[in-house]
Image (cartoon, rainbow, N blue to C red; front, top):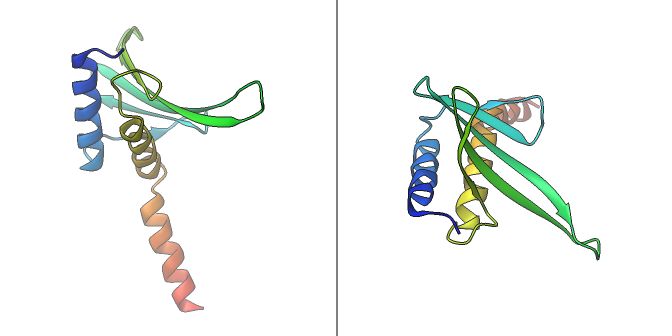
Length: 116
């Protein structure tokens, strides 16, 4: 079960990400995004696909906070009791869209489409 401080931290990261105040960046790993905050901490949000013994696939999301020495301070996953899976998924999708400039690229594609 996630502790109250980790839940509060996840809520804060989601809120600041929604506002566009966290500078999410892509990594070499397609399903992982990172952001430096305050010059002291690194956030990473990632998605992973799992399969059960029946072959059913599911996607899981994990937020990790590390310090500048790469020490893991806390982790919040959609599998943790007390963590809203919808919040972690929204954080991942919002960070992904910001890191990849999805909205700007869609606007550009719409402009091209309108000129056809």
